[in-house]
Image (cartoon, rainbow, N blue to C red; front, top):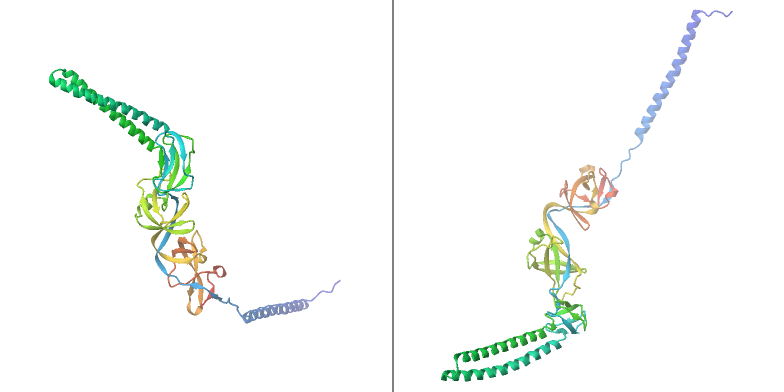
Length: 381
C-alpha cells in the first residue's frame, strides 16, 4: 500500500509547478518583447528609397489659337474646253478621211469629204433645165411684145395679151425654182466637206474611206487645243460659297496649279446630286483629257484651342483623350499630371484640341510611354 501524501507535501508540489511555469512564461514573454523591439529598431534604421525624378523630359509650351484651317479635297476630271463630234448632214459614201487620231488640225482645215458625183450630176441637170427655160422666156417675151402691139391696135383680144403676159411670168418663176435647186445642191456639195471648226486634236476616227455614212453619224471627234478645263462636282452649299474669277489649288499628277473658277452651273447633276463647277487651268498646261485631279479648298473654322503633336495624345476613358502636362509644385519639383482634351481636327502629325489645358501648362510632346501621372520629372533645358 502506497504511503499517503500529506497535505503539506501536496501544497509544496503545487507551489513548485507554479514557480517552474511562471519562469518559463516569463522567459517566453521576454524573448517576444526583445525580438519585436529588435525588428522595429532594424526597420527604423533602414533608409527609405524614393524614386528619383526622370531626368531631362522634353516639354513644349502651348499657344492658343482662335481658329484652324480645314482642308477638303474634291475629285475632278480634266476635259477639253470645247469638243465636238463632226458628222455630215446628209448621208453618202465617204470619199476620204484626211486625218488620223492624235493629229492636230487648224480651224477651217478639211478633214473628210463625201462622194459628190451625184450632186454634180444634179447640178448639170438643173443647168440644162435652166437653159431651156431661158429659151422659153425669150420666146415668151417676144410673144408678149407682139400681142401687146396687136392689142393696142385692136387686132388682138385682151385674152391673148393676158395669156402671153402670164405665160412669161410662169417661165420666170420656173427659172427661179431651178436657180434655187442649183443653190441647194451646191450647198449639199459644200456640206459634203467636213472642216475643223477650231484648232483641235483629233480624238477618234469612226469611219474610213469608202464607208457609207448616215446623216448625223459621227465621223471624227475633235478636242480643242486650248488649256483644258477641270470639272468638279460640289454640294450646292459649297458651290454657293465660291466666286467666279477666284483662284483655287488644283493638284494635277502631283503638280500644284492655280485653277481659275470659270463657271458654276445652275443645275444639279442627277447622277451625283452635285453642282458642276468648271475651272480654267493656266495656259500651256498639258494633261490627258479624262485624267483625275484634286481640287483643294481650305475653310477657316472659328474655334478656340491648341495644336498638339499626335505623339502627345493618350487614350483616356469613355472615348476621351488625354495629354500629360508638367505641373510645377515648387520645392517638391515638377510632377506629371493628366489633362483631358477633345480632338477637334487632325492634320498630318498634329491635332487641334480643346479641354482643360492652359497656355501656362507645358505638355509632354513625346515619350509619354516613359512616364505616368504622379511621377516627378526633370524638364529638359
